Length: 197
Length: 170
Image 1: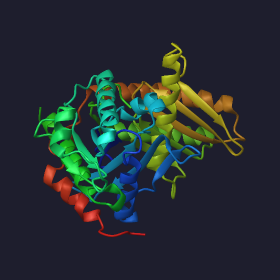
Image 2 (image 1 turned 45 degrees about the vertical axis):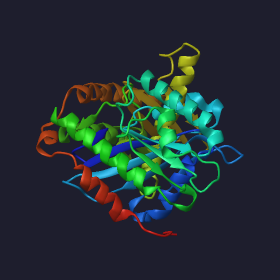
Image 3 (image 1 turned 120 degrees about the horizontal axis):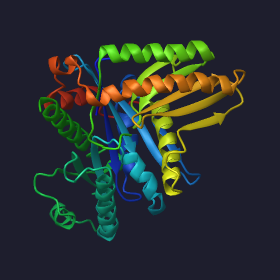
């Protein structure tokens, strides 16, 4: 987390993590669409020639002033394709919170699980013991056939009941704001605890 | 991108004033178009020079990512401490990205006409000064942080609601 009292800024870094084609970039595209241009940056994407994420997507939101601070929320995605593991680890560095974007389809459960475990390992390499970092799981693509139930998904990933899971169809904007709101609240709660200590 | 993802960096008025002076010094001595200081995970700390209309947050994110990727390459080939700076020579501008004590990243956009050697000399001196500040930032919580608590959970959620528009803004 980063607070600059001279510039009255609180800057938070949120990373959208998950397996390939789960909808991470789609989340940022939808957020970009639903936020007034005066309150956000342009969406910056480093893509391959096949239009897949190469390094990361980046979008900054500028929220209105709260208790004298101007919160700026920096949203990153990681590249989902398996061979970009090293890049995913880099993007996670310094994250204040993670939105894990999972693909709800049963046939993608193995990919979800592998991505979830890899994320925890990467965070562990930075000294973050999961679930110590604020996180929200977004169960995306709920409009597709052959999807797993949230309960089954929780069991598969070993999630406790107090770990937030949000159902979404990011392609049409459903369930995009809720996980973002939830992760911001978690992160700010953590910051307050940290400064009070 | 700090080594510990949960580390909080807090900058106070006094530190910001010193940082701004150092960046202005680089600007003046190198005729740089722009100088930016960011945290190593890409959050803007200070900007000097011409950056109006630019996506400053994006620039800082990219500079930090570039340096992080380079450092990761060095780590993979087991040469971790050798890559402290990156130079990109362009047609109009040269980009220099410097690691400042692993917690900050300095980006200098200098005109091609300015000799790289001179820019490097100036920037290295500045990096040393910034390194001292970075060390203080790690160990010090300014009084402002105690006087002004961060936003509450509810207020940050409401602030997001305030900028969220149902329907497409385009």
